[in-house]
Image (cartoon, rainbow, N blue to C red):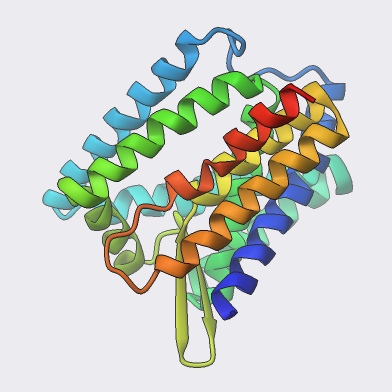
Length: 252
């Protein structure tokens, strides 16, 4: 029950703020990736993710991965925090707040500080990409990532290596929570990609398809908790239940 509540909280808070920030992006016609309606974009992004995974694995092998996490956790956190909050509190307050967040992140390594960082980074990612990618492109990408997750967890095991290294080094690429004596870990991608699809559906198809896609995505993530006790369970196939919801809503 605790793991379900943890997933629900992070899923909904990323979705809520992602919707708010993406709305600001749409009003200003901010587009990060051109060709967001071209199916080839899905394969291009998938290839980029494969290259990025290989790069991180090489850094782990060389015991240099902590420097990448430092870059993401401080420079990336500052930028994402700034872009998320500048729409709501203005540029100068957002800069000051972002510096404060980075300082707190540097001084405190408590789980709730790290989890806040992961939330902000996730909101930034879904907001930037949500204005650029159409739902079908995201759906294709999530299907590709589901197969990749199955192979990298069940066959090669390198996804487990990546996750273990992030947790050990204290990176912000995973959601983490501590409820009592229980520590809960969830990969950021398992929250980012379903919410990316949900937000894109909302702004391209409207409220009802958004609601159906969101329900299926959350159902899949909660269903995954039934298998958490088994080691090496890929979560992306469960997170991709939202693709089914999107397809169903497309025919309604």
